[in-house]
Length: 320
Image (tube, rainbow, N blue to C red; front, side, top):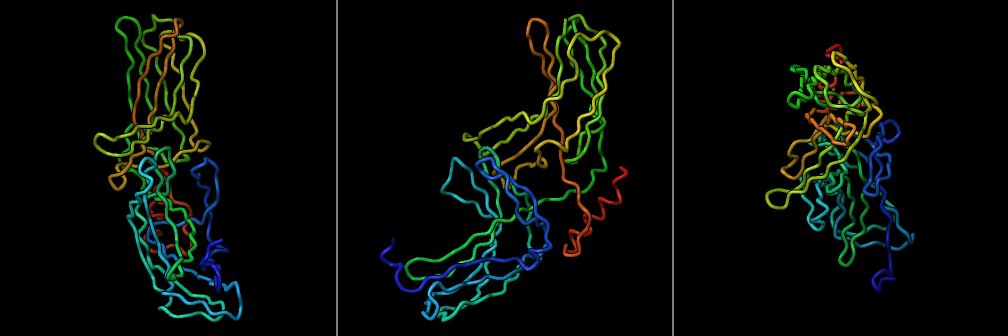
């Protein structure tokens, strides 16, 4: 027990104004578990109350001010001490003075810019949180509350199909085609594989979705590859002229939108990897990057004007 903890102390609680109606989203924590957090979008207002409850009623609590912060930060796991803040907003709730009874303070951060999606990866974490603090001379009392932010993208107008070839001279010639190069997170990858020349005895063929997380810059760049999905195309030898259809449903996998050079700190990219294995266990690969994006849900009344317009754009182009 701290020598300074005698006298008055308090508990802090942060409650959102729309806590009963706001949607929650599952998000992975650092230990790999999934928890539910309140979900926000770029441009939405974050408002609520900070409850300061005195532990010893009747005793006064002296303080140097009470504040609440809205923070967006990136933490690289190999550089734990440094938090790179890209959003930092502060509201003062009370001037220095004293509290003689439990009190509630209202706060509002209007139309907050939240430029990036919340992300917990192998080497990096991007998080948003509210932090309420009662500032004291010796030991501050503070409480953090994490939220999750999803970024919505507009439907890509140019969405060309992907055509790729795998060839080994005079032995193998395969063409494969996917319907598009940009997919939303609940999309279906539809494609076809054509066997034009088969002189190698292929015994197994699959498509993998690979997630590549890149962190750092210059000499201290780290790459983490993670196989998110394996889709078996065939088990057994194909014949010349055969074509095999592919339908890979993305909704069942743990995917995020593609993230490119987020705050010059990290990137997350996705690749389709075609793998062929012959009877002598030789492996042949062909890799192609795809772009993943998050499609807007139904517009909620509490959404900001900007976010509402973005969602309407989606709904008008779902047929695309």
